[in-house]
Amino acid sequence: MNLTAKEHTNFLYFICFVAILRLFLAPMTGLGVDEAHYVLYALNLDLSYFDHPPLVGWIQYIFTSIFGTGEFGARVGAIVIGFITSIFIYKLIYDINKNSTQAFIAVLALHASFLFNALFIMLMPDTLLFLLVLPIIFTVIEIEKNNTLGMWILLGILLGFAGLSKYTAVLFIIPIIIYFVIRKRYELFYTPKIIPSILIALLIISPVIIWNIQNEWSSFAYQSEHVVGDKGINWNGFFTSLGAQLGAYNPFLVPLAYFGLYKALRSKNSTIFLTALFGLVLIAFFTYASLYKTALPHWSALFYMLFIPIGTYYMLNISKKYLNFAIGFGLILSTIAYSELAFKFIPQPDYQSLHRDIYGWNEIMKKTNEQITDIKKEAIAVTNWTLASRAIYYNDNYESQVYLIDDRNDQFDIWEKDSTIGKDLIVINTKFFKKDITKYMKCDKVILLNNFDIILNANKVNTIKLVKCKNFQGLR
Image (cartoon, rainbow, N blue to C red; front, top):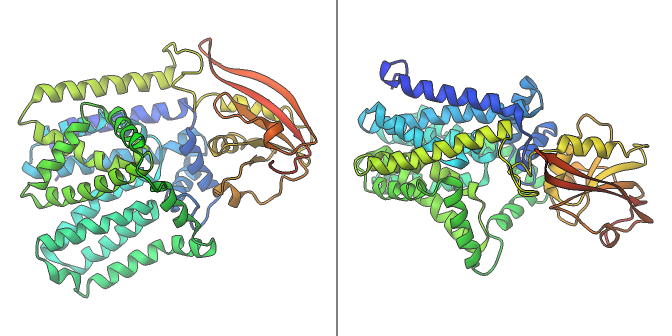
Protein backbone atom coordinates (compact mmCIF):
# COMPACT_ATOMS: atom_id res chain seq x y z
CA MET A 1 0.00 0.00 0.00
CA ASN A 2 1.52 3.30 -1.15
CA LEU A 3 0.08 6.05 1.05
CA THR A 4 1.40 8.73 -1.29
CA ALA A 5 -1.07 7.62 -3.96
CA LYS A 6 -3.89 10.05 -4.68
CA GLU A 7 -6.62 7.59 -3.64
CA HIS A 8 -5.46 7.80 -0.01
CA THR A 9 -5.57 11.62 0.19
CA ASN A 10 -8.89 11.90 2.05
CA PHE A 11 -7.77 9.37 4.64
CA LEU A 12 -4.48 11.17 5.24
CA TYR A 13 -6.17 14.55 5.52
CA PHE A 14 -8.59 13.13 8.08
CA ILE A 15 -6.06 11.48 10.38
CA CYS A 16 -3.77 14.51 10.21
CA PHE A 17 -6.68 16.79 11.09
CA VAL A 18 -7.68 14.57 14.03
CA ALA A 19 -4.09 14.39 15.30
CA ILE A 20 -3.73 18.19 15.17
CA LEU A 21 -7.07 18.58 16.93
CA ARG A 22 -5.92 16.26 19.72
CA LEU A 23 -2.61 18.07 20.05
CA PHE A 24 -4.56 21.32 20.42
CA LEU A 25 -6.83 19.75 23.06
CA ALA A 26 -4.04 17.99 25.00
CA PRO A 27 -2.90 20.90 27.23
CA MET A 28 -6.41 22.26 27.77
CA THR A 29 -7.68 19.66 30.22
CA GLY A 30 -6.26 18.05 33.35
CA LEU A 31 -4.95 14.52 33.58
CA GLY A 32 -7.26 11.70 34.60
CA VAL A 33 -6.52 9.08 37.22
CA ASP A 34 -4.74 6.56 34.98
CA GLU A 35 -2.97 9.20 32.92
CA ALA A 36 -1.39 10.74 36.00
CA HIS A 37 -0.49 7.30 37.33
CA TYR A 38 1.49 6.37 34.22
CA VAL A 39 3.30 9.69 34.19
CA LEU A 40 4.40 8.78 37.71
CA TYR A 41 5.83 5.60 36.19
CA ALA A 42 7.98 7.82 33.97
CA LEU A 43 9.07 9.91 36.96
CA ASN A 44 10.00 6.73 38.87
CA LEU A 45 11.64 4.53 36.24
CA ASP A 46 11.88 0.87 37.16
CA LEU A 47 12.18 -2.58 35.61
CA SER A 48 8.43 -3.02 36.08
CA TYR A 49 5.58 -1.94 38.33
CA PHE A 50 3.03 -3.40 40.70
CA ASP A 51 0.00 -2.77 38.48
CA HIS A 52 1.39 -3.21 34.96
CA PRO A 53 4.50 -4.02 32.93
CA PRO A 54 6.84 -1.08 32.36
CA LEU A 55 6.56 -0.10 28.68
CA VAL A 56 3.86 2.54 29.26
CA GLY A 57 6.16 4.25 31.77
CA TRP A 58 9.20 3.96 29.53
CA ILE A 59 7.31 5.46 26.57
CA GLN A 60 6.02 8.25 28.81
CA TYR A 61 9.59 8.92 29.92
CA ILE A 62 10.69 9.42 26.30
CA PHE A 63 7.87 11.80 25.40
CA THR A 64 7.87 13.75 28.67
CA SER A 65 11.64 14.15 28.43
CA ILE A 66 11.12 15.82 25.06
CA PHE A 67 7.87 17.73 25.62
CA GLY A 68 7.83 18.15 29.41
CA THR A 69 5.77 16.47 32.11
CA GLY A 70 2.76 18.75 31.66
CA GLU A 71 -0.52 17.67 30.13
CA PHE A 72 0.73 18.18 26.57
CA GLY A 73 3.84 16.04 27.02
CA ALA A 74 1.86 13.37 28.82
CA ARG A 75 -0.49 12.98 25.84
CA VAL A 76 1.73 13.26 22.78
CA GLY A 77 2.61 9.55 22.87
CA ALA A 78 -1.02 8.45 22.77
CA ILE A 79 -1.80 10.86 19.93
CA VAL A 80 1.09 9.50 17.87
CA ILE A 81 -0.05 5.93 18.54
CA GLY A 82 -3.62 6.83 17.54
CA PHE A 83 -2.29 8.23 14.26
CA ILE A 84 -0.24 5.13 13.45
CA THR A 85 -2.99 2.74 14.56
CA SER A 86 -5.39 4.42 12.14
CA ILE A 87 -2.93 3.66 9.33
CA PHE A 88 -2.77 -0.02 10.35
CA ILE A 89 -6.58 -0.26 10.43
CA TYR A 90 -6.77 1.42 7.04
CA LYS A 91 -4.26 -1.08 5.62
CA LEU A 92 -6.17 -4.02 7.13
CA ILE A 93 -9.40 -3.04 5.38
CA TYR A 94 -7.77 -1.71 2.19
CA ASP A 95 -5.92 -4.98 1.61
CA ILE A 96 -9.22 -6.90 1.41
CA ASN A 97 -10.20 -5.53 -2.00
CA LYS A 98 -8.04 -2.40 -2.55
CA ASN A 99 -10.99 -0.04 -2.04
CA SER A 100 -9.73 3.16 -0.42
CA THR A 101 -13.23 4.55 0.17
CA GLN A 102 -14.34 1.50 2.18
CA ALA A 103 -11.11 1.56 4.18
CA PHE A 104 -11.58 5.25 4.95
CA ILE A 105 -15.17 4.69 6.13
CA ALA A 106 -13.93 1.90 8.41
CA VAL A 107 -11.43 4.31 9.99
CA LEU A 108 -14.18 6.92 10.35
CA ALA A 109 -16.22 4.36 12.29
CA LEU A 110 -13.31 3.74 14.65
CA HIS A 111 -13.11 7.47 15.39
CA ALA A 112 -16.89 7.59 15.85
CA SER A 113 -16.51 5.23 18.81
CA PHE A 114 -16.44 7.38 21.94
CA LEU A 115 -13.82 5.58 24.02
CA PHE A 116 -11.23 5.56 21.25
CA ASN A 117 -11.38 9.35 21.16
CA ALA A 118 -10.22 9.14 24.77
CA LEU A 119 -7.73 6.28 24.40
CA PHE A 120 -6.05 8.00 21.45
CA ILE A 121 -5.28 10.95 23.70
CA MET A 122 -4.54 9.10 26.98
CA LEU A 123 -1.44 6.90 27.05
CA MET A 124 -2.36 3.62 28.72
CA PRO A 125 -1.13 0.00 28.40
CA ASP A 126 -4.13 -0.72 26.15
CA THR A 127 -3.03 2.07 23.81
CA LEU A 128 0.32 0.36 23.30
CA LEU A 129 -1.38 -2.89 22.27
CA PHE A 130 -3.33 -0.99 19.59
CA LEU A 131 0.03 -0.26 18.00
CA LEU A 132 1.29 -3.86 18.20
CA VAL A 133 -1.60 -6.24 17.49
CA LEU A 134 -1.96 -5.67 13.74
CA PRO A 135 1.81 -5.82 13.03
CA ILE A 136 1.78 -9.14 14.92
CA ILE A 137 -1.08 -10.40 12.73
CA PHE A 138 0.63 -9.22 9.53
CA THR A 139 3.88 -10.90 10.61
CA VAL A 140 2.20 -14.24 11.34
CA ILE A 141 0.68 -14.21 7.85
CA GLU A 142 4.13 -13.55 6.36
CA ILE A 143 5.54 -16.47 8.37
CA GLU A 144 2.83 -18.73 7.00
CA LYS A 145 3.69 -17.65 3.45
CA ASN A 146 7.49 -17.60 3.56
CA ASN A 147 8.70 -18.96 6.95
CA THR A 148 11.81 -16.76 7.01
CA LEU A 149 14.09 -16.27 9.99
CA GLY A 150 13.68 -12.51 9.73
CA MET A 151 9.89 -12.75 10.19
CA TRP A 152 10.27 -15.09 13.17
CA ILE A 153 12.69 -12.61 14.78
CA LEU A 154 10.26 -9.76 14.11
CA LEU A 155 7.43 -11.78 15.69
CA GLY A 156 9.55 -12.37 18.79
CA ILE A 157 10.29 -8.65 19.06
CA LEU A 158 6.62 -7.67 18.65
CA LEU A 159 5.35 -10.28 21.13
CA GLY A 160 8.06 -9.24 23.59
CA PHE A 161 6.99 -5.60 23.44
CA ALA A 162 3.35 -6.68 23.78
CA GLY A 163 4.33 -8.54 26.95
CA LEU A 164 6.05 -5.38 28.19
CA SER A 165 2.79 -3.50 27.58
CA LYS A 166 0.11 -5.57 29.28
CA TYR A 167 -0.12 -9.01 30.84
CA THR A 168 -3.14 -9.99 28.77
CA ALA A 169 -0.86 -9.94 25.73
CA VAL A 170 -0.12 -13.57 26.63
CA LEU A 171 -3.51 -14.27 25.02
CA PHE A 172 -1.96 -13.42 21.63
CA ILE A 173 -0.20 -16.81 21.62
CA ILE A 174 -3.50 -18.72 21.57
CA PRO A 175 -4.91 -17.48 18.22
CA ILE A 176 -1.51 -17.90 16.56
CA ILE A 177 -1.40 -21.56 17.64
CA ILE A 178 -5.02 -22.13 16.61
CA TYR A 179 -4.38 -20.54 13.22
CA PHE A 180 -1.38 -22.75 12.42
CA VAL A 181 -3.35 -25.85 13.50
CA ILE A 182 -6.35 -24.91 11.34
CA ARG A 183 -4.04 -24.28 8.39
CA LYS A 184 -2.28 -27.61 9.11
CA ARG A 185 1.09 -25.87 9.25
CA TYR A 186 2.37 -28.17 11.98
CA GLU A 187 5.96 -27.82 10.82
CA LEU A 188 5.93 -24.22 12.06
CA PHE A 189 5.77 -25.48 15.63
CA TYR A 190 9.12 -27.24 15.45
CA THR A 191 11.05 -25.22 12.90
CA PRO A 192 14.47 -24.19 14.28
CA LYS A 193 13.61 -20.61 13.34
CA ILE A 194 11.15 -20.45 16.22
CA ILE A 195 13.93 -20.72 18.81
CA PRO A 196 15.45 -17.24 18.35
CA SER A 197 11.91 -15.83 18.28
CA ILE A 198 11.14 -17.33 21.68
CA LEU A 199 14.51 -16.30 23.14
CA ILE A 200 14.13 -12.72 21.92
CA ALA A 201 10.61 -12.45 23.37
CA LEU A 202 11.80 -13.81 26.72
CA LEU A 203 14.77 -11.42 26.72
CA ILE A 204 12.50 -8.43 26.08
CA ILE A 205 10.07 -9.35 28.89
CA SER A 206 12.89 -10.25 31.30
CA PRO A 207 12.60 -6.92 33.21
CA VAL A 208 9.06 -7.94 34.22
CA ILE A 209 10.25 -11.35 35.39
CA ILE A 210 13.22 -9.91 37.29
CA TRP A 211 11.05 -7.29 39.00
CA ASN A 212 8.52 -9.89 40.06
CA ILE A 213 11.26 -12.16 41.44
CA GLN A 214 12.53 -9.20 43.46
CA ASN A 215 9.01 -8.36 44.67
CA GLU A 216 7.58 -11.80 45.50
CA TRP A 217 5.59 -12.08 42.23
CA SER A 218 3.27 -9.38 43.55
CA SER A 219 2.39 -7.99 40.13
CA PHE A 220 1.25 -11.37 38.79
CA ALA A 221 -0.79 -11.99 41.95
CA TYR A 222 -2.41 -8.57 41.74
CA GLN A 223 -3.39 -8.95 38.09
CA SER A 224 -4.90 -12.41 38.57
CA GLU A 225 -7.00 -11.02 41.42
CA HIS A 226 -7.76 -7.78 39.58
CA VAL A 227 -9.18 -9.38 36.45
CA VAL A 228 -10.93 -12.45 37.87
CA GLY A 229 -11.06 -11.89 41.59
CA ASP A 230 -14.42 -13.15 42.86
CA LYS A 231 -15.30 -16.79 43.41
CA GLY A 232 -18.96 -16.69 42.40
CA ILE A 233 -20.64 -15.41 39.27
CA ASN A 234 -21.85 -11.83 39.60
CA TRP A 235 -24.68 -11.40 37.10
CA ASN A 236 -25.30 -7.76 38.05
CA GLY A 237 -21.67 -6.98 37.38
CA PHE A 238 -21.80 -8.91 34.12
CA PHE A 239 -24.74 -6.95 32.73
CA THR A 240 -23.22 -3.72 34.06
CA SER A 241 -20.08 -4.52 32.07
CA LEU A 242 -22.11 -5.10 28.90
CA GLY A 243 -24.02 -1.85 29.40
CA ALA A 244 -20.79 0.05 29.98
CA GLN A 245 -19.39 -1.26 26.69
CA LEU A 246 -22.49 -0.13 24.80
CA GLY A 247 -22.18 3.36 26.23
CA ALA A 248 -18.42 3.60 25.91
CA TYR A 249 -18.04 2.45 22.31
CA ASN A 250 -21.24 3.86 20.76
CA PRO A 251 -24.39 1.70 21.09
CA PHE A 252 -24.88 1.67 17.32
CA LEU A 253 -21.33 0.49 16.58
CA VAL A 254 -21.02 -2.22 19.24
CA PRO A 255 -23.38 -4.60 17.36
CA LEU A 256 -21.30 -4.00 14.25
CA ALA A 257 -18.22 -5.34 16.05
CA TYR A 258 -19.92 -8.67 16.76
CA PHE A 259 -21.28 -8.78 13.21
CA GLY A 260 -17.74 -8.17 12.00
CA LEU A 261 -16.42 -11.01 14.15
CA TYR A 262 -19.04 -13.38 12.71
CA LYS A 263 -18.22 -12.43 9.12
CA ALA A 264 -14.46 -12.51 9.72
CA LEU A 265 -14.62 -16.06 11.13
CA ARG A 266 -16.18 -17.12 7.82
CA SER A 267 -13.74 -15.14 5.67
CA LYS A 268 -11.37 -16.78 3.19
CA ASN A 269 -8.99 -13.84 3.59
CA SER A 270 -6.15 -15.19 5.75
CA THR A 271 -5.42 -11.89 7.50
CA ILE A 272 -9.08 -11.25 8.32
CA PHE A 273 -9.56 -14.83 9.53
CA LEU A 274 -6.50 -14.64 11.81
CA THR A 275 -7.78 -11.30 13.11
CA ALA A 276 -11.08 -13.06 13.86
CA LEU A 277 -9.24 -15.67 15.95
CA PHE A 278 -7.55 -12.89 17.90
CA GLY A 279 -10.90 -11.21 18.45
CA LEU A 280 -12.63 -14.43 19.48
CA VAL A 281 -9.98 -15.21 22.10
CA LEU A 282 -9.95 -11.65 23.45
CA ILE A 283 -13.71 -11.22 23.76
CA ALA A 284 -14.16 -14.73 25.18
CA PHE A 285 -11.59 -14.01 27.89
CA PHE A 286 -13.02 -10.65 28.91
CA THR A 287 -16.60 -11.92 28.78
CA TYR A 288 -15.60 -14.75 31.12
CA ALA A 289 -13.76 -12.31 33.39
CA SER A 290 -16.81 -10.01 33.55
CA LEU A 291 -18.86 -12.89 34.97
CA TYR A 292 -16.78 -12.70 38.13
CA LYS A 293 -15.70 -9.08 38.30
CA THR A 294 -17.26 -5.99 36.74
CA ALA A 295 -15.06 -5.27 33.73
CA LEU A 296 -13.94 -1.76 32.94
CA PRO A 297 -14.90 -0.71 29.39
CA HIS A 298 -11.33 -0.25 28.19
CA TRP A 299 -10.41 -3.85 29.02
CA SER A 300 -12.09 -5.01 25.80
CA ALA A 301 -10.86 -2.05 23.72
CA LEU A 302 -8.57 -4.19 21.58
CA PHE A 303 -11.51 -6.28 20.38
CA TYR A 304 -13.56 -3.22 19.41
CA MET A 305 -10.53 -1.53 17.84
CA LEU A 306 -10.27 -4.47 15.43
CA PHE A 307 -13.91 -5.28 14.80
CA ILE A 308 -15.76 -1.98 14.62
CA PRO A 309 -13.84 -1.27 11.38
CA ILE A 310 -14.25 -4.85 10.12
CA GLY A 311 -17.97 -4.84 10.92
CA THR A 312 -18.27 -1.50 9.15
CA TYR A 313 -16.64 -2.95 6.04
CA TYR A 314 -19.10 -5.84 5.87
CA MET A 315 -22.09 -3.60 6.67
CA LEU A 316 -21.29 -1.37 3.68
CA ASN A 317 -22.88 -3.96 1.42
CA ILE A 318 -25.98 -4.29 3.60
CA SER A 319 -27.11 -0.92 4.94
CA LYS A 320 -25.27 2.30 4.23
CA LYS A 321 -28.11 4.24 5.91
CA TYR A 322 -27.42 2.47 9.21
CA LEU A 323 -23.72 3.17 8.89
CA ASN A 324 -24.30 6.83 8.04
CA PHE A 325 -26.42 7.22 11.16
CA ALA A 326 -24.11 5.25 13.49
CA ILE A 327 -20.95 6.99 12.32
CA GLY A 328 -22.59 10.41 12.13
CA PHE A 329 -24.03 10.02 15.61
CA GLY A 330 -20.63 9.06 17.01
CA LEU A 331 -18.70 11.81 15.25
CA ILE A 332 -21.18 14.50 16.33
CA LEU A 333 -21.15 13.43 19.99
CA SER A 334 -17.37 13.04 19.96
CA THR A 335 -16.99 16.54 18.50
CA ILE A 336 -19.26 17.94 21.23
CA ALA A 337 -17.27 16.08 23.90
CA TYR A 338 -13.95 17.41 22.57
CA SER A 339 -15.38 20.93 22.39
CA GLU A 340 -16.62 20.68 25.97
CA LEU A 341 -13.25 19.43 27.21
CA ALA A 342 -11.54 22.38 25.54
CA PHE A 343 -14.00 25.21 26.18
CA LYS A 344 -16.18 23.95 29.07
CA PHE A 345 -19.36 25.62 27.87
CA ILE A 346 -22.11 23.11 28.69
CA PRO A 347 -23.98 23.88 31.96
CA GLN A 348 -23.83 20.92 34.30
CA PRO A 349 -25.45 20.40 37.74
CA ASP A 350 -23.43 20.56 40.94
CA TYR A 351 -21.21 17.49 41.41
CA GLN A 352 -22.28 15.95 38.08
CA SER A 353 -19.70 17.61 35.88
CA LEU A 354 -17.98 15.71 33.10
CA HIS A 355 -14.80 17.37 34.40
CA ARG A 356 -15.09 15.92 37.90
CA ASP A 357 -11.94 13.80 37.68
CA ILE A 358 -9.80 16.15 35.59
CA TYR A 359 -10.51 19.66 36.81
CA GLY A 360 -9.24 21.62 39.79
CA TRP A 361 -6.21 19.70 40.96
CA ASN A 362 -3.84 22.63 40.50
CA GLU A 363 -6.04 24.65 42.85
CA ILE A 364 -6.39 21.78 45.30
CA MET A 365 -2.65 21.29 45.64
CA LYS A 366 -2.00 25.03 45.81
CA LYS A 367 -4.41 25.52 48.69
CA THR A 368 -3.19 22.38 50.45
CA ASN A 369 0.42 23.51 50.28
CA GLU A 370 -0.59 26.87 51.74
CA GLN A 371 -1.26 24.96 54.96
CA ILE A 372 2.31 23.60 55.09
CA THR A 373 4.64 25.52 57.39
CA ASP A 374 7.35 22.90 58.05
CA ILE A 375 7.99 20.34 55.26
CA LYS A 376 10.12 18.22 57.62
CA LYS A 377 7.31 17.71 60.10
CA GLU A 378 4.23 18.09 57.90
CA ALA A 379 3.09 16.22 54.79
CA ILE A 380 0.04 15.88 52.56
CA ALA A 381 -2.04 12.72 52.60
CA VAL A 382 -4.91 11.17 50.68
CA THR A 383 -6.90 8.05 51.53
CA ASN A 384 -7.61 6.65 48.05
CA TRP A 385 -5.16 5.61 45.33
CA THR A 386 -7.08 7.47 42.60
CA LEU A 387 -6.52 10.68 44.54
CA ALA A 388 -2.87 9.80 45.13
CA SER A 389 -1.91 9.65 41.45
CA ARG A 390 -3.28 13.12 40.74
CA ALA A 391 -2.17 14.66 44.05
CA ILE A 392 1.43 13.52 43.54
CA TYR A 393 1.45 14.57 39.87
CA TYR A 394 0.07 18.05 40.54
CA ASN A 395 2.30 18.47 43.59
CA ASP A 396 5.43 18.28 41.45
CA ASN A 397 6.17 22.01 41.77
CA TYR A 398 6.10 21.96 45.58
CA GLU A 399 8.63 20.72 48.12
CA SER A 400 6.08 18.91 50.27
CA GLN A 401 5.56 15.15 50.19
CA VAL A 402 2.28 13.38 49.36
CA TYR A 403 1.41 10.01 50.91
CA LEU A 404 -1.34 7.49 50.35
CA ILE A 405 -2.72 6.34 53.70
CA ASP A 406 -4.70 3.13 53.29
CA ASP A 407 -4.50 -0.60 53.98
CA ARG A 408 -4.28 -1.61 50.31
CA ASN A 409 -1.04 -3.02 48.93
CA ASP A 410 -0.13 -1.22 45.70
CA GLN A 411 2.54 0.65 43.76
CA PHE A 412 2.47 3.60 46.16
CA ASP A 413 3.82 1.38 48.96
CA ILE A 414 6.88 0.75 46.78
CA TRP A 415 7.38 4.42 45.97
CA GLU A 416 6.90 5.65 49.55
CA LYS A 417 10.22 5.07 51.27
CA ASP A 418 9.74 7.31 54.32
CA SER A 419 7.50 6.54 57.25
CA THR A 420 4.57 8.85 57.97
CA ILE A 421 4.47 7.90 61.65
CA GLY A 422 4.87 10.98 63.81
CA LYS A 423 4.17 13.45 61.02
CA ASP A 424 1.36 16.00 60.96
CA LEU A 425 -0.66 14.99 57.94
CA ILE A 426 -2.89 17.37 56.01
CA VAL A 427 -5.50 15.05 54.53
CA ILE A 428 -7.37 15.91 51.33
CA ASN A 429 -10.99 14.79 51.52
CA THR A 430 -13.12 15.25 48.40
CA LYS A 431 -16.85 15.10 47.84
CA PHE A 432 -16.44 11.67 46.28
CA PHE A 433 -13.57 10.19 48.29
CA LYS A 434 -13.64 11.06 51.96
CA LYS A 435 -12.93 9.48 55.30
CA ASP A 436 -13.89 10.36 58.84
CA ILE A 437 -10.31 11.00 59.93
CA THR A 438 -11.18 10.70 63.62
CA LYS A 439 -12.35 7.14 63.06
CA TYR A 440 -9.88 6.25 60.33
CA MET A 441 -6.53 7.46 61.70
CA LYS A 442 -4.81 7.54 65.06
CA CYS A 443 -4.10 11.22 65.70
CA ASP A 444 -3.37 13.31 68.78
CA LYS A 445 -5.83 15.83 67.39
CA VAL A 446 -7.95 16.27 64.26
CA ILE A 447 -8.40 19.83 62.99
CA LEU A 448 -10.49 21.09 60.07
CA LEU A 449 -8.20 23.53 58.25
CA ASN A 450 -10.14 24.57 55.18
CA ASN A 451 -13.29 23.81 53.23
CA PHE A 452 -13.60 25.07 49.65
CA ASP A 453 -15.41 24.32 46.40
CA ILE A 454 -13.98 23.72 42.95
CA ILE A 455 -16.16 25.91 40.73
CA LEU A 456 -16.66 25.75 36.97
CA ASN A 457 -19.17 28.03 35.24
CA ALA A 458 -20.79 28.89 38.59
CA ASN A 459 -21.42 25.21 39.39
CA LYS A 460 -19.67 23.00 41.92
CA VAL A 461 -17.41 20.35 40.42
CA ASN A 462 -16.08 19.15 43.75
CA THR A 463 -15.88 20.12 47.42
CA ILE A 464 -12.60 19.78 49.26
CA LYS A 465 -12.02 19.53 53.00
CA LEU A 466 -8.49 19.80 54.34
CA VAL A 467 -8.13 18.06 57.69
CA LYS A 468 -4.97 17.98 59.81
CA CYS A 469 -4.07 14.79 61.70
CA LYS A 470 -1.61 15.80 64.41
CA ASN A 471 1.11 13.24 65.16
CA PHE A 472 -0.15 10.43 62.93
CA GLN A 473 0.32 7.01 64.53
CA GLY A 474 -1.26 4.67 61.98
CA LEU A 475 -4.70 3.48 60.99
CA ARG A 476 -7.33 2.45 63.48
